[in-house]
Image: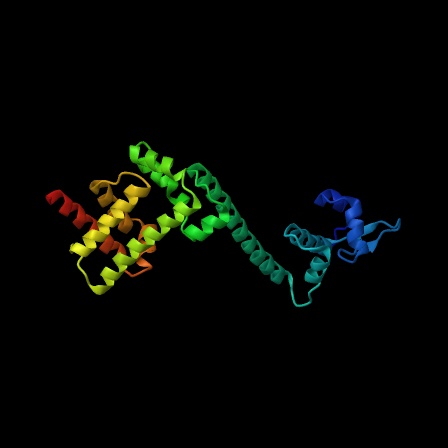
Length: 257
């Protein structure tokens, strides 16, 4: 069977590379031409094209030409090995890009929420919890309510010191809930209901007027929404349900007074 051979100009046209680039690859031993024609022009065969495809892939991933030469000449890596390596590198790159996109999205959402914190301050205060992850859903549920608008207004004015106070209060309330839960206290006991009331007042003090009906709805969401449930249950499995029940018990206590 006749072997297909490409001249350097044909290969340049086929790949979009310049002839000068192909000459350079030949000169440094990265893509040596299979041979030379009678007029001295470089000749490339199918195996050269396959090698060039690998070269271009690794170049796209940011490897230097010296690194690429080492990779493609690895005697322990066959064609399938190169495909496996390329797949692994692409998967890693996709994950890096996904994280970069997520970071940009988070910053855009933070801008919409008008949280005036640097990325370092946000990491210090919120850690892995990102308020903007819940922003779109909150806007969809409550965007037309006075409570949502009031929360947005207040949040836009908070400093790092304010957020640290909010964080400390929230962690204190959660710690109280967890301590009561692990001690075997009943969610409709006075201590648990007092903790629920402290939680309700925390929201009222920092975000919006949180009535008992709204608070009960939040309690339900802490169990129904996997993200909130995981955030509470990491302290103690089942804590989210305990908090919900304490919130409902506190609302009932208030209606009976």
